[in-house]
Image (cartoon, rainbow, N blue to C red; front, side, top):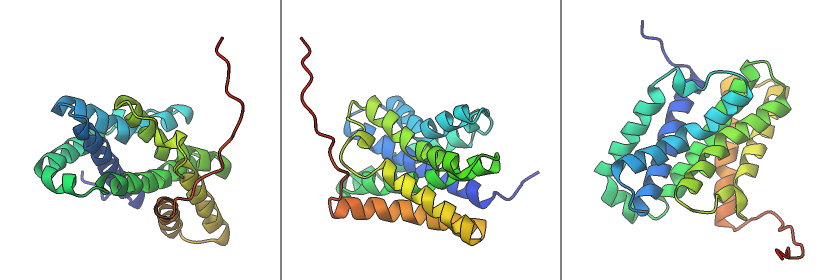
Length: 210
């Protein structure tokens, strides 16, 4: 029977679509073929969630529900159909990546809490869900992962997770807390890039390989 998807499931679908587009968009910039672009998009979409589920000792979601494979295929067709528009929008990757980062942080943290884990675990799992897929994507396309650059990326997930925790403490409804978490991640990411806000650089002496 058809079941109405929950709020988190809707966020998961939108986040999967957004992250898949970000991966496929970068793969197209590197002149990948259709299959290669699909693989990059799928890895971006399911990478963080797979790592999260393995750490939480549950079956990865994409092995239970084919929605992730289908959603990535839809993202692939979306990029193919609207390729010319996406190419002219230089910030396309950034917007879709930020949306995916925000929504996956919510999904990862919420799933951890539903499984009975404490909030500090939920914040870490939310950050892994949001950021790990982007790391896999960047490795696949031979780029330095965003998480290892000066940009605020994974820290935006941490801040969003803390906001989710504070909302739960105050007693807000679950969906309001989740919206606040996702909005925080998105806004922190946007502001950090717009105003070039970065974390301090850890400086040290160069290592002698001899």
